Image (cartoon, rainbow, N blue to C red; front, top):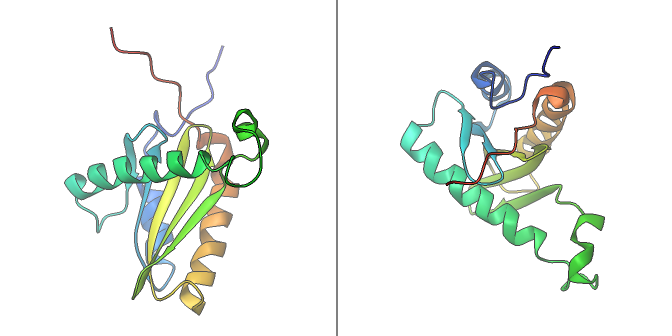
Length: 146
């Protein structure tokens, strides 16, 4: 019996590097688990920064999932409106946060405001990458610590 490869069992670095180098304006990209574990990072991002950012991105994703009540849905309906993406528009950089696969997210930093051309192109490139790699972008559920 063969097991489907997942983002936590194969190296996705090459895909992230290609995403960054082929799209002007993309600064860094990373893949992480929704519980904050770094899975892969583009070449311009240090491991320390990537690990810290993975934890932050997982926290942002978790906060966004808790918006059911604010959006007029009962809290138990969280799964009826699954998390898809978040855009943080900073002064000269936009941070994009996407659901990538089961228990994973993909984050990217792009030069420019959220309504600029490079950000629109980056969003399309990221979505294309996620669709193309969908079968392997999930992560296995990690066991509870003993």
